[in-house]
Length: 138
Image 1 (cartoon, rainbow, N blue to C red):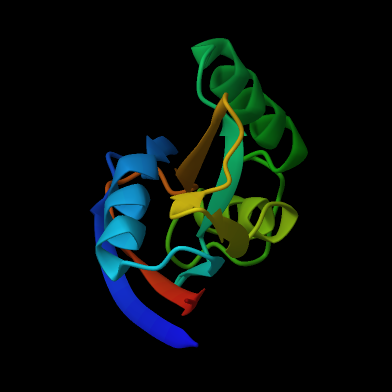
Image 2 (spheres, rainbow, N blue to C red):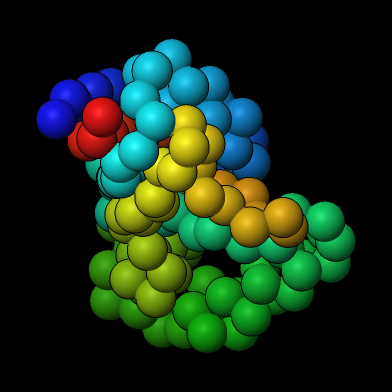
């Protein structure tokens, strides 16, 4: 068994979905393994990771709208030390995912035809986010 680890920094533009698929595919390809499992982990509490459709942008727009309804900025939250988007960002991150596991088969990540990997920024302002990656296999 071999292992590879790394950190990828992602600059977000504020609230929304940043497609990180190409960066992840490049990193996994450089690891040189044929079979294994990739684990991705976001090192933040107000951003998250999703595997979602990458063909129709309406899917991401609708997901954003749904998250706005589930955790609105004007929800009367107690935790607002960093602004009205702070607590809703934590709730949205809790409702989505902080880590992903993707099989590596035949040297390729086993994503479906219409699947992309997204970093979801839940804060209004741009941020520098870090993804920790761990690939184990052969």
